[in-house]
Image (tube, rainbow, N blue to C red; front, side, top):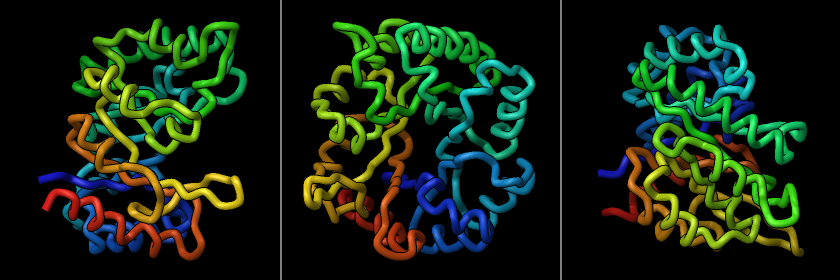
Length: 249
């Protein structure tokens, strides 16, 4: 049976206000797990208890890129992961200073190095993209091209966000087929277009072939994410868990 998680960035305001209540509501909505975006000021032991109380699993953690250059920070996330049963640490975003030819090369080398120590701890390192990685950093290469060429594909994994590939004009089916051996997580976000502007939507409310994308990869979790809302984010993301599960009934 498919397992569905939610990236907690989707409900960041609710998490800041009351993490325990928010996690309980997500569990009751049908989610099987959560993907953390930081630790929300709680220890690994506290998170272990919260997840256990709500019968949820850890579907990865988004950690800052600074952890790649600071061993003590990386060690923190390793220990934290072990406490809560997490096996995936993911770099979710890089600032503009990284978005150059040399910046992407440096990023890949740092990830290659960090992945070795993470591997010894039984944890996989991954990278989550947005749209800017698909912009050119020189005449014939995009940032994504640089990363693909420079990362150690035996150690580094990818979290493909199908909203951002479509937003960037990438042929998502081809990308998923080409990189499927390195994809260990997928972000499912729907897309609607209004007055020429694209934005995310709840699963099933937009135009993307999300099930078609999900069926092209083999992962232990399908991770829902949403960034734009018309009302209360927590209420808007609740139905998406059952929509995704409904694909496989």
